[in-house]
Image 1 (cartoon, one colour):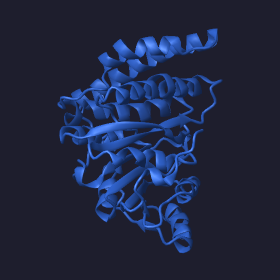
Image 2 (image 1 turned 90 degrees about the horizontal axis):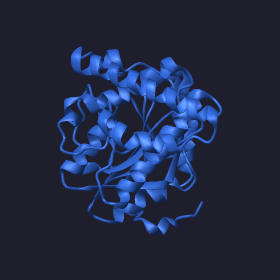
Image 3 (image 1 turned 30 degrees about the horizontal axis):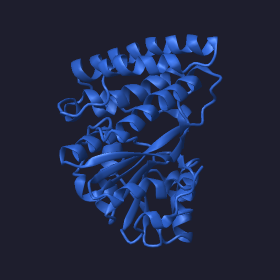
Length: 307
């Protein structure tokens, strides 16, 4: 991968890296260490978590690295944890990530470089699946991240069109982010739409890679996807004039990309199964979010197989 020098972004701009975690003691250390490799000298790394096991890992790093700080939240869901972290953050630019993923070497400079343009309000990194492609769920993760999200964001960023940042890794100008609704299911979508509505551009940094383990069971896949896709059915996003993701856009634009992705006959069959799974997903979103209006607590279930 081509290297980007740290001088290509402004290290004098105060930076806050904000990691949210819950019961992720096994993975949060790697998430922290990956950022520490290239954190600018005046930057801070905040980890928001409520449970003692994860906190113990964070405090271990806090003892060794002055930039690391634990921020305790009240365990009322991810939007609340993000609000706590955003209030604690002092940086002009805030990088958001999770405690069960880790960034690639060189990701941070690539993610920050587009902010040299004052018109840019947010920048998305690129999720890369670490799940094996030789299983159904693993294959789906590669198709959705590579043929789906990656190619879509790449094309939209090139044409200066609106795009939604990936919640696994993105950066935003702090003053553009108001307090998030406590019941927001897709905080990355809410923030992205708010940035665009204030007249700022959103860019994609495909070199800023973040490695993600995706669900390995269909139950967990549905739990995770219903939660994230459900955010697009909430009023905060659904009534926005900007569009990137919906069932109809998925059918119109996603189908050709998905059909070109398989490399074997078995993967062709798995692709057809994914079409059925996506239909199942969007029906669940319609029923749970639009019709039944289930609570955030009811929809936000922990997914164990991604840890």
